[in-house]
Length: 104
Image (cartoon, rainbow, N blue to C red; front, side, top):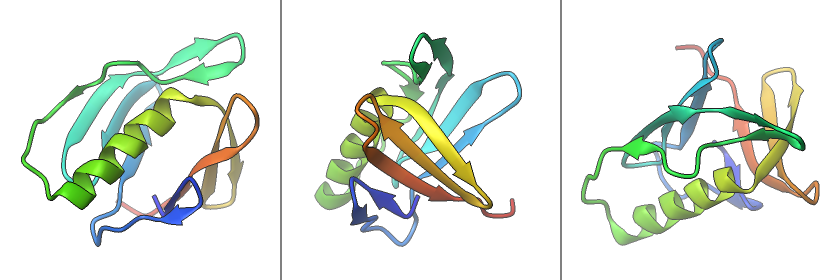
C-alpha cells in the first residue's frame, strides 16, 4: 500500500493485500498478518469484520497505522483497478486505500 486516506504509509515495510481466486484475503498491516474471506455484498464487496491475525508487539506509530488500515478495509464497498494500481473506495466513493502491484 502506498497511501491510506490520502496519507503516505509511514513504514518502510508497507501494508499488502492479496486476494486469491477463491476470494481468500491475506493482508499485512505493517507489523501483523491477517487472513479472512472476502464477501460479495449488494454494494460491491466487503472485507470480513474480524480477520484472524497475529498479535505482534508493534511500535505505536505502526500500530496506529495498522488499525487505520483495518478500519479502512471495513469501509470498502468498491475498487478500481488501473494497470498495476488498485484504488479501494468506501461507500461514498472516496478513496481509502491505494495499492500498487509488485512481483512476488
